[in-house]
Image 1 (cartoon, one colour):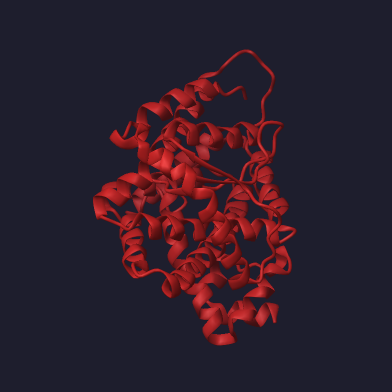
Image 2 (image 1 turned 90 degrees about the vertical axis):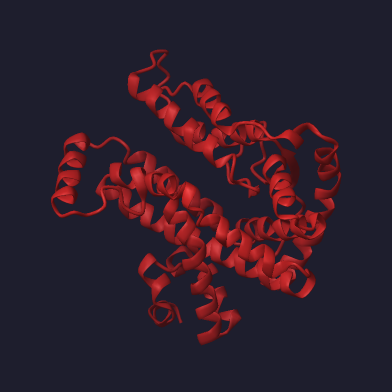
Length: 333
């Protein structure tokens, strides 16, 4: 495979579009403010979760094109390069698909803890704020900038402490990603997918399930790994949202309004079809599944019981266990 990454970047930038305040003084003010927000949030998250922080991440305020570029580093690192100068039709299609996905997401993401493979130019430990999207949401919904930005910092710092404070987690995550790549080449995949689509159509079932086009094209081995990835991300997203809300409720007057706004934003019907097709619908459900799991564990066994999930990869809940907390507690306790 020899994906033309410049094509992916161009497609993404076309889809990303622009925002009027993207080059205004508001961006410079945001750049000055965010490092302190992250420092404050990091300390509070460490106290709330018991996860130990190490050092400070890079803190960056970026536009959509820059966010796309940083995420393309991840894709270029995990997709095998054959070293050939010849670009196949499939390589070009892959570039367009990745570019379209990142371009769409660059209009939605507000912040991100960078989970990329470390390179010479990138430490892989960074918290980003997407200025155009953040400023647009503040303006549209008349949010308090000081509270909204700090609230987002709480969420991203929770993700950072998950991957910094749980020693095995980063390696485990990248191990799953590598396994998916290893199983990429599946003989007869096109025939298998065509047969599965026909069965779904004959049974009047959804042609593309929760895992989207990625899940539809995945081999049986890949689907097993995707289930593990989805269960992990649901756990992490749910934990991050609960921690963000819990600290926010104590400190921020507008916490409930911001929380309700983001939940409604994830269910925007204008983007539901795209989410379903790409598999991002599952990511939207991850917030709900994960949050419910975290709160159910706390209710049945106490907040400290969550520490059992961080002991080893084997202790992470499966997708089925996310829906049935008692099963998970019985297995790990």
